[in-house]
Length: 157
Image (cartoon, rainbow, N blue to C red; front, side):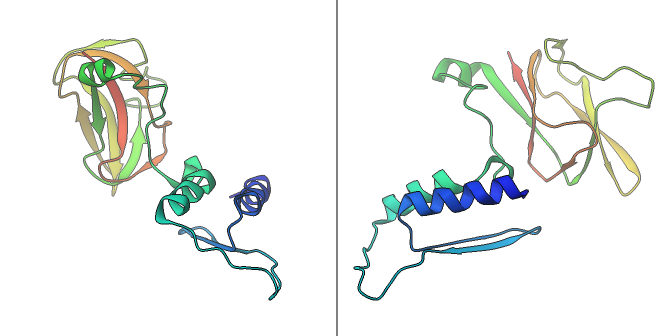
């Protein structure tokens, strides 16, 4: 997290009325506590209120998700297929430097067509499409680390 994200997190926690907030990841551990006096009344929060606070405070980088702009309605959900990473590794969009990408947004693809490679332990493994359709979203940047089952592409049938 950079300084602006930490400052934003502190402001969000302060505005939410929370007394204490903890966030821990592999990279950082943050504890934000409100400065309260003994004379102030402590208010208990319901689980739904706590969920709202957490959803408001958590940043996009700490959660793997698909943006609302990708799938806008139930009809889009039925037409969309998400290709996920079969294992942990590094996302690679082209067979070698100087060559073109396997696929770009807007490309029409066939079932079984190679979409990318995942490099793990110096081995390059193809990720192929499970369906035919159009590539509508590429959710990962070239040479980014990916986790098992992380969404990589959205294909619209």
